[in-house]
Image 1 (tube, one colour):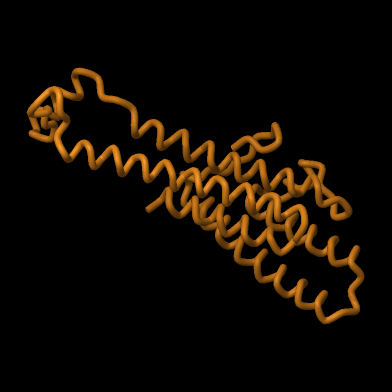
Image 2 (tube, rainbow, N blue to C red):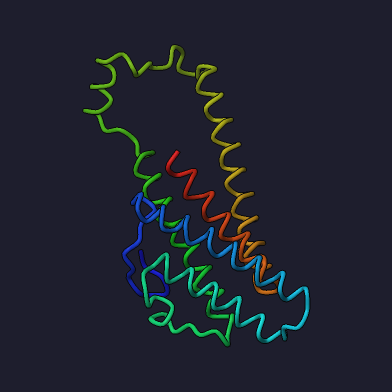
Length: 187
């Protein structure tokens, strides 16, 4: 997977990588909640809280992409902007990999494949040419609903990314959304 122009050994298609991602996400959420609670109780300066949240995010990135990844990407605890950029790139890379493999599954069949399906009885040509069968109309409506849902999910993801810039706790929302995308891909 390419993140910020650098190749990392991580794939949504690898179950071990998904386990590592899930474990890292759970640890990040737990640590972030503990840090936020400590900040709310008082006694922690705002800068120290931001550094702690940055360290938590960097540790998560290191767990997901491999040890030393945050340093390789030039991240440090004093500047959250590059961390947000890496998290956004990670989300984009997840979406691109998901799209790459789902697009392969949706490719049209060639003549040989259609004939093989027809022999198996799986391909039913339309009964009347001008009016498609009701089953195909339902498939089109389902596809439109699915596309609409995908658009809404993309909007939600972008809103979560924008919220990250203002609220370190929103980082948890993005991680949860990335985990949801990964889970949907492997269902």
